[in-house]
Image (cartoon, rainbow, N blue to C red; front, top):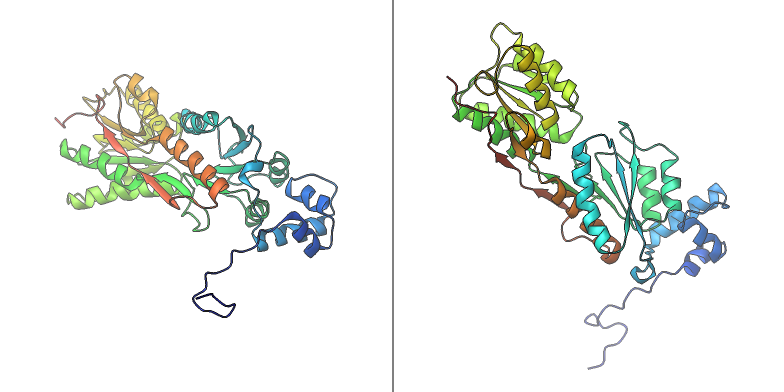
Length: 346
């Protein structure tokens, strides 16, 4: 039977493709003006630019995959680019984009939580295929401007609870904190301290929660005086470890929120005349290459940083080509790597 326009069983008609000409007509401007807005070019009044952006977002215009230049840029914005942690993530992302003839564009916010207001104009002018935000918060306006050009956004190791509208990649930080602390408990330690990073970072809150959960499940009372907070750098670990080791009843083991802090713990122990692990067991987090080179080689929680970078790059490219990733939220497994910086309590 031939379906009629009123036949409820008729297949739905495909939604007509939204073109630049259609957006131009709705905005009451020329197609070249719409093209300028979409490609981030100057020469368009602010009110007109905002109107076009809103229409593009409302009507779901997307750049055709076959229109993307083979030398397309995947833009990556970092809260900070001053550590080996960032380099491992970059290696993972670069592996994906290089294989496809693309390049990475890097922005270092130098410790800022959000990009500067001019950042979005600079990024749009480069016409990226997608944006990956690493521990960086983009404003609603910045997200809207990316969306108005159909530029997908992926959060990598997000600072806070991921927005359901933004696909994200992270690691099982809670499990990592649990495994690190359980390892020390199994070695007989009960005075176990934790040096954590800023509580504004979701990963640090999760690692601390894992530490507390391990103590609780073992029936070991949590001592608030054994939890310290410092920057995720060597000096942060050293400063807080010095304070912990100066206590009347110092810890016999310290779990640090990352490998750099753990190296600072090594330094504090050395200055206090203590040996690692004979007098003080130390566990880090990340498993950066330096963890194996430390003296003694460091027990640490392996976070698959390169794989996280690879996953984020693949996710943003899937969004650019198909409009949706396979998964909205990916958490990669952490794993405890036992080396020589931990030992049974004597």
